[in-house]
Amino acid sequence: MSIPLEYEVTLPDGQKFNQPSGLFINNEFIKSINGKTIESINPSTGEVNGSVYAAEKEDVDVAVKAAKEAFKHWKKVTGVKRGILLNKIADKLQEQRDLFGAIEAWDSGKNKTTNAVFDVDICISVFRYYAGWADKITGKVIQNDPKKLAYTVHEPLGIVGQIVPWNYPIAMAAWKLAPALAAGNVIILKTSEITPLSLLNVARLFKEVGFPPGVVNIISGYGATAGTALCVHPDIAKIAFTGSTATGKLISKAASDTMKAVTLELGGKSPLIIRADADLDQAVKWAAIGIMSNQGQICTATSRIYVQESIYEKFLEAYATHVKSKFKQGTMFNTDGVIVGPQVSKLQRDKVLRFIDIGKKEGARVVLGGEANTEGDLSKGFFVKPTIFADVKPEMTIVQEEIFGPVVSVGKYTTDDEALFLANNTNYGLGAAIFTKDLVVAHTMAAEIESGMVWINSSNDSDVHIPFGGVKMSGVGRELGEYGLTMYTQPKAIHVNLGTKL
Ligand code: NAD
Image (cartoon, rainbow, N blue to C red; front, top):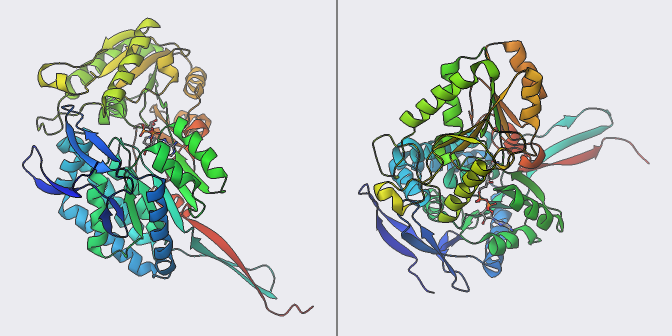
């Protein structure tokens, strides 16, 4: 099917822009070779937002060729220059914050004012942060033998394939693009087939600010075709992936044949422990943000809450009241303080509803929600009411499996040891939260919890300076901070003989 390479869109908030539909390769939007396309569906209305060209293996080959050529020159560009270009991307996003927020809302279903514009802020801070790193990447001199000068240089890896999910389309891309570019790599990034629109608008910024052709290539496409083609291509040095654990396993296997470096940011089932000595009001607020924001579509969502027995019922009552009154549901351009939008797709909505059904059948108590929201206009979209299950048991499906929706399980415990056992009783290990006023217990528990991140008296507190990532089935490697940068360089050791004659 042939579609125009650009079409005008007027968003419900009145903003107009031209949506590109092509594959962004060599700083141009081009049609896919086989002409395949993807339809993008509006999560609030179920209508088609637009179509984009879908890359297949042949298109990935074209992108790799462009990136390979670009790397010859890009690797010689100074860190200062790379930093200037990255800062320019941040400037552009800053200038058009409202428009990019609106586009991201339209593409993914997030509410624009309470959610999507903050994703643009994340992108701005990530590009600025790594712009600062671009001229500060240094190796070491290793001083063991006076007859030898030994040093390391931290080189870029080359062509990096990046595969992102639909829950934070532009933010997850920024987490990957900015450090990889700061370190001197060239990139082929594949968007999610569910949210292909917003990143194509970001793509054009790279040309506008002066990145050379082929340094950043952004393609739409399905995982099984374009995604796999990236994972197996012999000229791609690394795959950086964010998405489900099931896909992470496939990617890891596919990338192993060509021995690629891999970072995987995968799923989670993060616990949140509330001790009887905690500030209950704070625990209630963070526990709500930790699962209900972004429609529960957050890998680090604190989806399992464990409350100490003596405050269990009191917490449940306060929690249900807070979620009911503050987590209003509505469409993405609603400006009345809507926090919970639709799930991203019908498939995802149905999956969440299936888990809710299982939760009821397995005997969990529904304290709030527990069904789709079909009130008025919401019936057209993919809305699930914020749902709280109580009295859950460790073996229940809703306690073990990642639901990826606004659904939380609450259970009770007696001792700190029991809380730790319950928290660690999962295959995942992304985040964990502890609420207590006892600092010794907080730090002792933080040490015992099996996760890549621990929040003491908060939840889902992500910060560009601080590494993000998981253990166990939640992934390999880290993003953000200096640790995130190291994932995009490799040390080369150079030995200089200063006098050892044979
Ligand atoms: P997904 O795994 O279905 O898809 C993610 C991306 O992988 C998409 O771009 C998709 O096209 C691609 N893909 C699918 N199959 C592929 C294959 N065989 N080879 C190569 N690429 C392939 O995940 P999703 O449904 O888009 O996102 C939701 C999941 O992502 C949740 O499980 C969530 O926990 C996880 N997630 C994790 C993090 C994190 O940082 N840990 C962040 C966001 C989302």
